[in-house]
Image 1: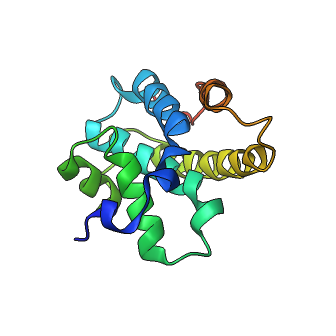
Image 2 (image 1 turned 90 degrees about the vertical axis):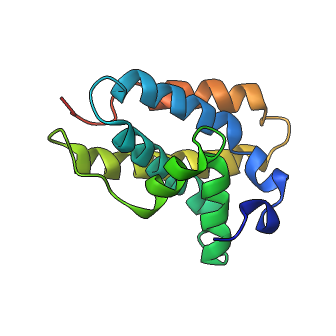
Image 3 (image 1 turned 90 degrees about the horizontal axis):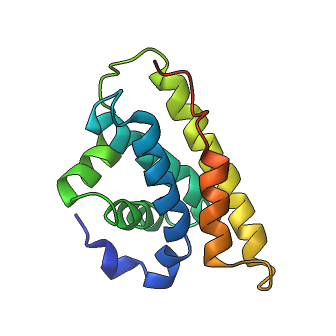
Length: 145
C-alpha cells in the first residue's frame, strides 16, 4: 500500500481535520457503547469518504482514497483505518445499513458546504467549521438501537 503522505499534501488533509474531529467525537457519543468499534470506525470512514467526495470525486481515485486514509489515521491506528476502508463489518444492530448511507450523504452535504465556505475566505474559519460540524452531525445518524 502506498504511503498516503507521499501522494497528498498536508493542506489537502488539513482543511477537513476540524470537521472530521467533530464527527469522530459525535460518533463516539452516538455509537461507542451500542455497536462494535469496527462499526464505529466504518461509519467514520463512510463519513470521511462523503466529506471528501465533493473535492475529490473528479480526481484520481487513488488520491481520494489516500486523502480518506490520511484523515482516518488522525483518529485510528493504521490497522483499524485500513479495516474501516477495506471491509464492512457485520452489523450488530438493525438499521446500520441505513445509518451508513445517511452518514455518507451527510458527509457529502458537509463537504459541499465546506467548499462553499472556502470560496469566501472571510466566512471560512477552522473554529466555525468545527462547531458547525458538531451541530450538524447531532444525534440523528439513524435509528440504531
